[in-house]
Image (cartoon, rainbow, N blue to C red):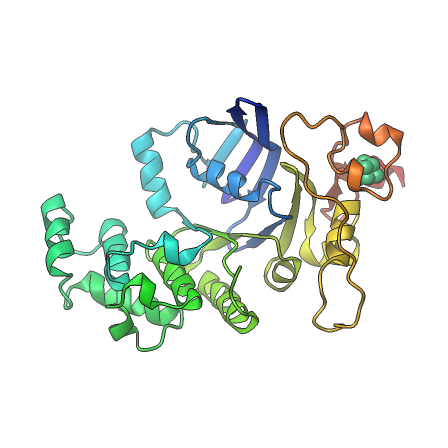
Length: 342
Ligand code: SF4
């Protein structure tokens, strides 16, 4: 059984200018123990898709889906209370901009300890008065939740974790704050971690360290990861399967190696050609012409057609359906033949 099964997910925002179809009929699946990539340019709908799965899209956003299941349970049929419990216990999310995602008024260790008290079996009161007292007086440093918070900070590679736990978020560098976010997200030992651009804005060395840590944590905590990024190099290094998103739709999906060896959709080919290669830094980089379209009432059937070097007249009129091109590889392009028709 898949850990996460999403089918036919749509997210729309109704605005004065018209309906923004930010996510349009997306299917996505994550199996236990996998790191699955979701890649695409900024504005392609990746973060909205993640927030839609988490049930975090607020009005005027409207989410509908044929199915959103975690461990076989329908998230759509759950009460708000049960959904909140799932968000705390079974799914965690690391948001972009880690420094601003942490509470600036609380020590980092206390934020993680609070999460542990709420979601793990520690014998400490979580009544409102007990939590308020902790906020005013500080957490008891001999409490189990505090000790586990320090262990979590150590596990994500924060040096001198015991003293750093007493720092406030503004005292952390971007890389340290990102590690603290990973520690916080994993402190409830989720089945699924959704990591939204977890390395954006960090220098290359810190990026590599955080990605290594994510991979190690997958094994240690038995957590699957949906890794959202605009960076194909991150997907190539870290994931086993990858989904490419463009203008609200998944336009190609395949095992990661297959996707890079045999990209089938012109957008994926263009993304790969626009990505610098560490092993061949002198290779020419070809930027993708144009930009992601405004998602209000897109007038052409294939949303990539104005930017596509292979576009013909039919691409503006006929909507491409996903085509099975073999080896668990699908691409939504009118110019690709299904495997049985080759
Ligand atoms: S359907 Fe046409 S425009 Fe769209 S990606 Fe394929 S060739 Fe390009």
